[in-house]
Amino acid sequence: MPDAVSYRPLRAADLEGVHESNVRAFEELDRRLGRAYPGPAPSGPTALLRLRRLLSTDPGGAWLAERGGEPVGCALGILRDGLWGLSLLFVDPSAQGSGAGRELLARAYAYGDGARGHVILSSADPRAMRAYARLGLALHPCIAAHGTPQGVAMPPDVRAGGPEDLPLTEAVDRAVRGAPHGEDILTMLEAGSALLVAPGRGYAVVKDGTPRLTAAFDEEGARLVLQGVLARAAEAGQPAFVEWITATQQWAIEVCLDARLELRVESGAVCLAGDVGPFRPYLPSGAYL
Image (cartoon, rainbow, N blue to C red):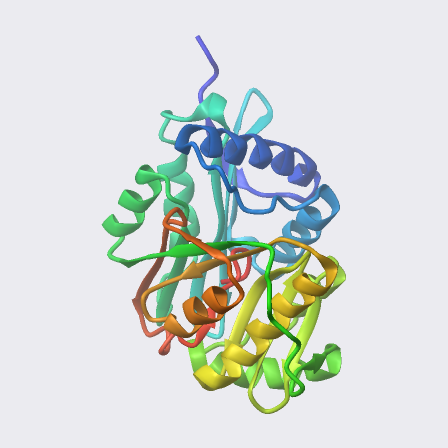
C-alpha cells in the first residue's frame, strides 16, 4: 500500500524535484487531452528562476505535497497589491486521484484570504476547471493562436525596452488589472525574455516568438505591441503561440488573423472573481497572472 500524501510549506531544497514532477504532470495532461500544439515548456533554469522568485516573495502561498519523501505536487499562490493569483498547481501522475490537488488548492487559496480579486489561468483539464468554478470564480473560455507569422512588420512606434521601463509596465498593469507585476517582470527578463514597449501605450514580454504578457492602456496600444511580438517571430522564422485570448480580447484575434496564425479552441479558461479591473486589453502571464 503506498504511503499517504502529506503537505508542508515549500522549501528551497525542494525546487528541482518540483520542476521535474511538474514536467511529468503537464506531459501527462497533454497526452490525456490529445493536444497537438502544447504550449512551450520552460527549461529547467527558467522554471527554477520562477520558483525561487515566488518562494521568496510569497512563502505563505507555496505548498508541497510529498509521498515517501518525494514531491508529488505543488501549489503557488501569489499576492500583488491585493490581487491573488494561482501561479502553479499540479499533481504528479503517480498521485492523481489522491485528493492532493484539492488539498494544495485549499492551502494556496487561503493565502489570498481578504484579497480584493482572484485570478486563475486554468488548463483545459475538466477537473481543474470544475475545481475553480466551485471556488466561485467565473470561467472565461479561451482560444489560442499558433503558427509562424507572415506579412507582419515591426510597428515604428514599438521599441525594445528594459528595466528602465518598469514604471510604464506598472502604470499599465494598474489600469488593466489593478495591480502591478513589478519586479516579476525583471525575473522574466532574467529568464531570457525580452520587453517590447509602445511608449505611453503598452508593453509586451516576449520569449522565443511568443508573448508571455501583453498589456496596454487601450486596444490600439495592445495591437501595436502584439504586432511587434509577431514581427520579431516573423523576422526570425519562429513559430508563435498566443494564448489566454478570451472573448473580450477581439483585438488580439484580429492581430493573430492578420499574421495568418491558426486559431484553436484548446486553451482552458481565464477564471476571475472580485475586483480584477477591466482585465483588458490584456493577455496575462501563465506564471505571474
